[in-house]
Length: 398
Image (cartoon, rainbow, N blue to C red; front, side, top):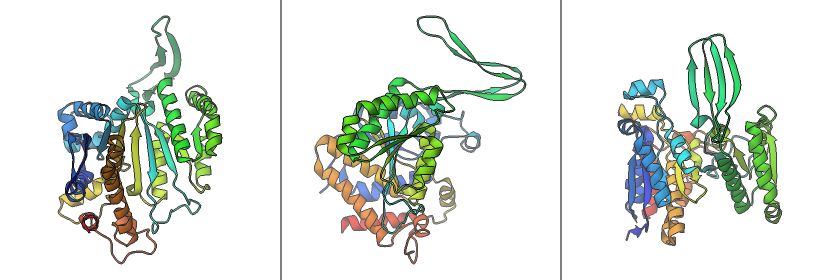
């Protein structure tokens, strides 16, 4: 008998190979066991283009309305992609748009599997990444300078005289980028990381470059210092510590640490370092990701991209071995959260059962090519994309 998911989950479909996997996961692992009300949004790059990206905004607002969403990987088009898909323009990152609307923090945590050893020998415990998911380069304004001229940073206060700062006197062509952040968002980010640290009882690290960026980065450090000081008693009670480092020192230290901490990162740093940590623990396909808004809205997704190379092989009719674990865990994360919010433990228990079955399958030697190449011991053969999902489906029925 199917388990009923009480309230809706917002589903955001995506692009390329992850879109193929997404349908397999729904059809083989979820729909045979669950009765769900899915609020569906097609975030494929072609549909975003057709709607002038309105669908992305509508999807984000749907998460604000229903509280829980799950997102497939999507294309952020560059010039080559515009040509490939005959798009109107280089649309902004849908993740950036959604994160700006929800103003959340992205938490990423590796999935630990016994027979997939970390590439970094010192890593013994999961390293969680807390990524500030608002502003900076992802909400930037850019301009390609055609020739000589003066670039200025101008701020016009609502109440008075404008402030103008010289940026650069161009002698020839170049580029300019302006980016911003808000105290409200930075403070929400700091508090979200503190709450995660205290809840998980793990140390909190934060890295920035305040020695160079004496206003922008320094303001992040200032807010973190204030918020951690305000929660000093909570840190002492939980037995955890807060540590600020320059971002380059944090990178050096993380390579020698055993793990077990939450590493809070500014937006771009979190984008890069979450991929590094995921690869260090085995694969981007073994990384969970959730966007948490200040008012308690949740959007789960895989931490990797659309797996374009595999998709091109799929279009040729060739077999692929694409890791679906992170996409499966995006669905189970959303289902578990929905069950917790709705007070329906059967939904949460099913989600955790799927996760346990996935990990057990890998530990029994059933895994895709990316994991097979680093597993210890190595399996005799690797599973194709659909074979792995079929193996999980069979174990769920059994």
